Amino acid sequence: MSKLSLDRILQSQGFGTRKYCRSLIDDGEVSIAGVVHDNYKETIATDGLVLTIFEEEWAYREHLYIALYKPANFECSRKPSHHPGVLTLLPEQFSWRELQPVGRLDHDTTGMLLMSDDGPFIHAQSSPKRHVPKIYQATTAEPVTPELIEQLKSGVQLHDEPAPLAAQHCVQRGEHQLEIVLEQGKYHQVKRMLAAAGNHCSALHRSAIGGLTLDALALEEGEWCYLTPEQLALLVPSA
Image 1 (cartoon, helix red, strand yellow):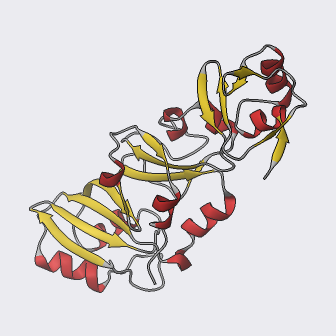
Image 2: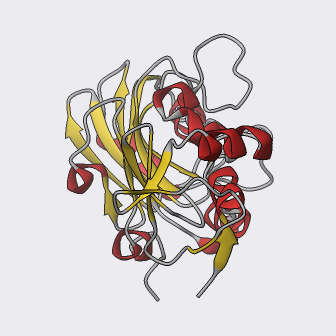
C-alpha cells in the first residue's frame, strides 16, 4: 500500500504547485472522511483515498483514463491554434496532470476521444502494431455506391503511402452515410480514403474504439467519464 505526504498527494492530483497545495492544507480546505487534515507532512495511504477539497470530493487516481464525447470545433491539442482545446471541457486539475489526447480527431470530427496522463498507455493505444479497430460514421457529399464500398474494402492508394490502405470493414448506412472500420490510424485517413475513391467526406463521427462504444458510455456531446478497468479491457484487441 502506497503512502505519500498530503501535499504530494494534492500535487499529484493536479491541485497546483507544492507550495499552493501546502497553503490549501494549512488553510483547512482539505478533509478526509469528514475530518480536516491541516498537516501537509502527514503521510496518507492512497489506496481508496477520497479527498474533500473546497467541499468537493475527489477520489485519488494514480493515472487518469478518460473518455470524452468530443464536439465539433474543438482541437485535440494542449496548445490549440484556431479553436478551443478539448482540455477546456474538463476540470482544470486535469491540465496540471499533463492529461493529453490518445491520438487525435480533426477539429470538425465528433465522437469518442480517449485521454490519459499514463505515457505507456498512450503509446500502446496509439501504436499501429496494436491493430486497435476504430469505427467511424461518415457522411459523404456524393451518394454511397456499391463500387465505393468495394474500393474502400479492397484498398485505395494515397499519394504519400507506400501501399494501398483498406478498411477492415465497410457498410452503407444511408444514401450519404457509411460505417467504416480502420486499424491504421493514419493522418486524416477516412477523409483521404474517401477522396481517393472519388467521393468527399462532409462529416465524420467516431463511434467506437476496440470493443468500447460511445453509446455504451451514455455520454452527451461535451461530456466525459472515467474509464473503469472493465472498460479499459475492451480497448485491447481480441486474440
